[in-house]
Image (cartoon, rainbow, N blue to C red; front, side):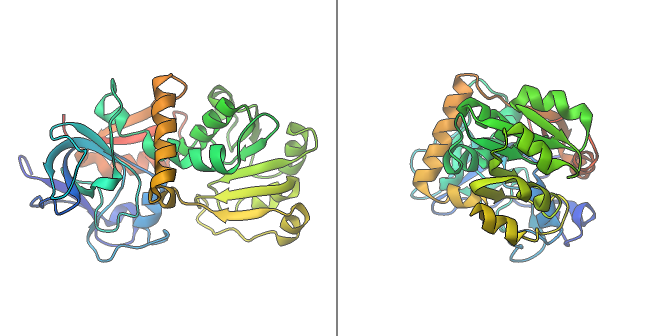
Length: 335
């Protein structure tokens, strides 16, 4: 495929084995659209769910590209688009992308889902930040109103969004509690902003949460696991607690412990960042926070490993395996 345009597509909903690298002819940017020459794109757990046919949406048809987080140079601007500069580096924002995935040498995207790459960053750094920090920003800073005296539990906290939640919560002064299955992750989570770290798969979690919160319980939960731990942490909910579920790492939808929710007057909220990107005011709040926090050094990119384009499947296998290193896994498409 030397010299040809390449794209990774999902041929069937079988996970990694359903991916194929193929040649294609780049399309043209239509009205309201922009075309990027892709420099890098990111792997995200939601894409794995989509590759297995168990996400909040499926593709309109197959084969289809995967991924919604990329960075590249603008090489074509469609009719009616303003505020986008030819030849400049932009990042895509996470969106319900259907047939407009980013896993190719070029990306065509609605201009609403582009944002200028932060200055002073490499392409892979600029393309690594938006999903993780904006996913965490809305539930932690806006919906849970992280502040001193607010207790927030983050499950699977070594994930990029989980780690970002710890950082953002700490910035706001909240009591942040992270969970991990492995004790070797404890120091990493404490450096990221956790005040306390629970290690395990649920045994003793209610008692630990009561201890970490001086008996008050947790006011908010940022949960990417699914069914795994909800029946445990639900026994340590503070009054009017909010549960934000945004993933199913254990591949099972949660069964709600209704009696515990009744007793705490708790709210269970299935959460997707995409809905906030679709709202112009919410999107602007998230972008402003990320740009300002990056500029002040309060948050920064954290990249674990970068793979070349042809090793996309290998990158997925790496992401799925237990890791002692953490951060974004990226695909470098071009220099």
